[in-house]
Image (cartoon, rainbow, N blue to C red; front, side, top):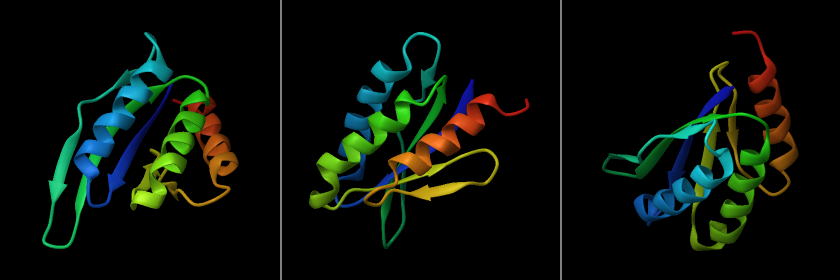
Length: 109
């Protein structure tokens, strides 16, 4: 099992993160887990954080497809892995995210 933290930022970060959390809960199935959304606010930005435990890379597809549908509205997504890898989603980043999540899922524990 791998794990990651997903950060959603933008004007509607809390609402968007709730949508993404629902999609991730479906993608990870009964073997994984998705934490409740935690909202962090600063004077400049709102970031909604989702903790994720997963098996396989299907969640990478779920995250990038969700982001692809919301990015024109200003949604930004960053995925943080335990090894310090930080992936800010951009056009074409699904493959990089899948590779990183696959390595985290199969890496030493």
